[in-house]
Image 1 (cartoon, rainbow, N blue to C red):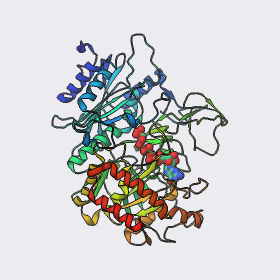
Image 2: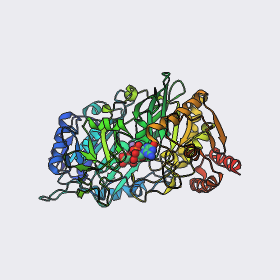
Image 3: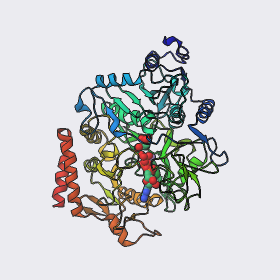
Image 4: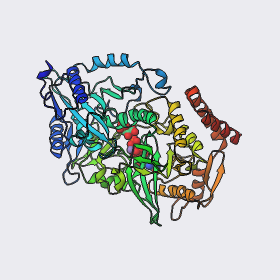
Length: 605
Ligand code: GTP
Ligand code: SPV
Ligand code: MN
């Protein structure tokens, strides 16, 4: 029966495991045909034409955004679904207290019934990809099988996919198999919808098997399996086993006016400023920044004992609202070159895109992300708060040459940060690695629209990895401590904790953020060079009065003091939350982090 599926027997590979994966997936999902993704420009044109014909894409004005597309998702499929995301380890303890868990066999049984016939009436695309540079010693390979042409087009941008990846599939090499279906089979004669998906969603990782099954959603981190599912959840498990780290971090290179180079990585939760910092245009004269990555860092200890970071991705899947020529000019320059996909933003009458925060005045008329007429009087937002641009890193004017270097870049500093309207100072310096790991382990942030659920709720988000740790969160923190011991102690990255989002009594941001954040980074780098002054506080070191370069900045001394303040009474409230979080981790919490908490309590007492 399956031999009749066109494409099944014309594979461009003899890789036995891959052929078995494709055959078994086809037998289960029963697509009408199979296509092997080659990643070519011709294929991009064919797939995007198909998406236009299907009504999924609208082609944007060639003058404004060449070779670019507007796309509105189903209003019920706009973000990651953390409550539907599972780590199915054999032992529930290995998924830990922070992940949803189900027995792998039970989950497979459920998903097998979900996937049975789920691609009927559709094309099954076989998309081989490589996360990170193609010329790595051990290229990190995956195969996404999907029935979504939107996923194929997006993976063209976000990963190195198709023939150039498939060429690396030798018999000795393994790959991460990912099976994805939107879960919307088409019966003969049934009319398709622009954004097929299923009310029931499952985003499932099998850590021991290193496999991914994703069902029911076509959106971003749920469906582009190379991204969060592979490069963070599965990779974090590989990294634990093999002595490296898979982290939710941007990577950037900073060049001082004296031409000194620094490499930094920063972990902020979803929608908390990674992409903006990764492309920052320094407001201080003489400083330059180059972009290595904006969302994920794979970190390995090099032969010299330093931490080296690689960006596994090939594009940016960035938060649209708030992005404009004042806040993030380099993102604007990147998307203005075209070759991009815009999902759930608003459409202008002349075929361009718009979102809240772009320009001073909204256009007089728009088509909203819900495909309704929109005017400035409308009560609803024109763009969804989690609307996204998907654009190639190659087009980024600040892209660092090192982004494609398989060795990665040696990290001088790691920044943790979150979105907190109170308590957390603009910047705090950790005393040492263990104290820095404690800062990351206790990182907190207000929830955002990047995941479904309530927005603005403070939660602990260890190293900004809460939704992405593929194993026990206590073990993950222990791995951080161990990595510090595995590196050259004198060359460990210095750790800082930042908060761009502290507010005054009226709810106004105390710090201007964006390009001005260079001032905060500058202080951190000067601390490493031993040239900036700091004061000790119970939680760590903060800039001494006058140490932060605010030359030419329009910020009052009062606001700056408030942004930097450490209030013991706020911290006593924080301690209660940290204790609750550590209790949840139970006996898997490394004792050194427990010691850090006790020491902090002493200092605050
Ligand atoms: P994900 O892609 O979801 O992981 O998010 P991200 O961490 O890359 O966040 P991003 O840089 O896209 O920023 C998210 C939102 O925060 C956007 O609306 C930005 O405009 C806003 N933002 C980023 N940096 C700053 C800042 O320094 N200050 C303020 N006030 N807002 C910021
Ligand atoms: C995030 O939520 O951290 C994102 C968007 O970068 S998604 O690809 O949907 O995960
Ligand atoms: Mn981002």
